[in-house]
Image (cartoon, rainbow, N blue to C red):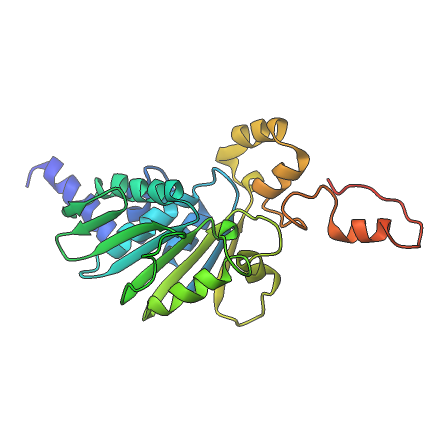
Length: 260
């Protein structure tokens, strides 16, 4: 066997055996530890609270590509708006070019493989979002921004029953206050509840240092805390925490300072 062919065979074998090698190949760079954790977890429910530009879409798309290797599997990606649904669909399509999978049908929001596996990306406002049978992977992106009753809980309760017994669901978002389903996944966390929670602050990722400093200069203090440091502020926009506002309206005189 020529050396080049042997090298390619060894690289292919490594990807077949090592999920981290596959992830690295599909996203185009060495993954961050949190991306490896999210990609390889066997938990049935995963909650990702991730700062902007940290690589959330890349790892979600890679997880969808992994699922597309399973014959006849069905992956549903849900986002608050059509534009966001198309973003993750486009990322999945780009990563598929780095695989041996053959696409037999392609639209802006749906891809079907020759092995019968499919991925569908839909906005949460779509009337067709319910009714898909036997969903093996459900990705709910920008979960904190879902519209509807109880901060998106009505939509989530409608799509979760579509999951198969061994299916996985990813709840992924930057924070948007405390009054939504996504926030409650973290605020109401209980030991042993089976949810794999991952919190990723942009300030903790060395490769983002330059971007983070630019964001620090550009964004307001509140926006930076919310979108980069992934803090769940009182309503997603308030400069003062709710507890401080309550102190300011009490009869007890205390010093009031914003939390920076």
